[in-house]
Figure 1 (cartoon, rainbow, N blue to C red):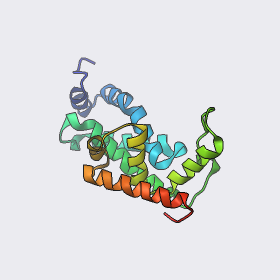
Figure 2 (tube, rainbow, N blue to C red):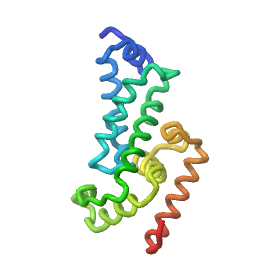
Figure 3 (tube, rainbow, N blue to C red):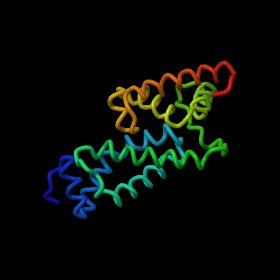
Length: 172
């Protein structure tokens, strides 16, 4: 391939039509993107949403202003695809969407937690996932979701308030 293997170099090569460079970028981001997608659309739709986002990113690679900001740019595209998928899913209930509980986990608690999270707004669910599961800071989450760090804090607060109401048997 012969290109700079840093993110910026790979993006520049991919812009020139180098599919292998884009493949390396995808490979580096895949697991993180799938985790982000799962936090919004659940296990079954996550990989499809990521793939849709990757197709869109390949087509729009020329619009990326700063190649070194590729990860945040790609995450925003995937997040938007997840929001679209979530809107299409609304109202559909599938037992298959409930992930399998880890062996050491109480199955009833795992299902209840998933059901609780699935009732939160997609952005609130994503903020909670990125904070709790991924261990990301507000400053790291903000560019991924195209919001400010203050908005990240507000979404997390609303998510916790909604979760508390749901646990008490109220509506979100």
